[in-house]
Image (cartoon, rainbow, N blue to C red; front, side, top):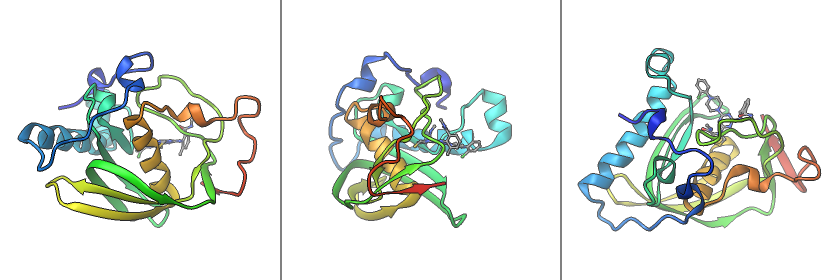
Length: 183
Ligand SMILES: CNC(=O)c1cccc(C)c1Nc1nc(N2CCN(c3ccccc3Cl)CC2)nc(N2CSC[C@H]2C(=O)NC)n1
């Protein structure tokens, strides 16, 4: 079971190194790791389990955050319409994106960052992603809103990018150009 001890924090080299493509079909080990990442998110959103195991809640997790330098991400979140979205993917790649930007009006948090970093994180409003699902089958996703933001945050981790790298240093709350806020 993944707990907070397994999550590396800022300063750990794994967060600043590019992660490697996962050979498909996935090995039993990679499959198990990805399942455990998804379990973490689901456990972290259960008040009892989160309390019992001291889990910080998250809606996205990337393998480099557990010191596995492989291109694997897990996402488990509710969207604006209250619909549950669960993804466990290998080798996600953004193949196209909107010119329009968007950002979380409350800023972003990260399980590997034990501090609040205020500011808007400008992201592409809509993205098209190609990846492989947990069984290694190809998937193509068109994402917008919160899901688009979470996917970009997690794919950034595969490229050694942290959310605060995108925050405008001079004016953290400057309204990003051509952007629609996501509450
Ligand atoms: C500095 N201000 C803030 O953090 C921030 C502050 C307010 C609102 C938002 C919206 C903020 N921003 C933000 N809030 C989240 N959560 C909201 C609470 N939630 C959660 C909490 C408890 C139970 C169940 C759940 Cl579900 C867990 C997820 N998550 C992310 N991110 C950025 S993309 C990856 C994702 C992630 O999983 N981070 C750990 N950002």
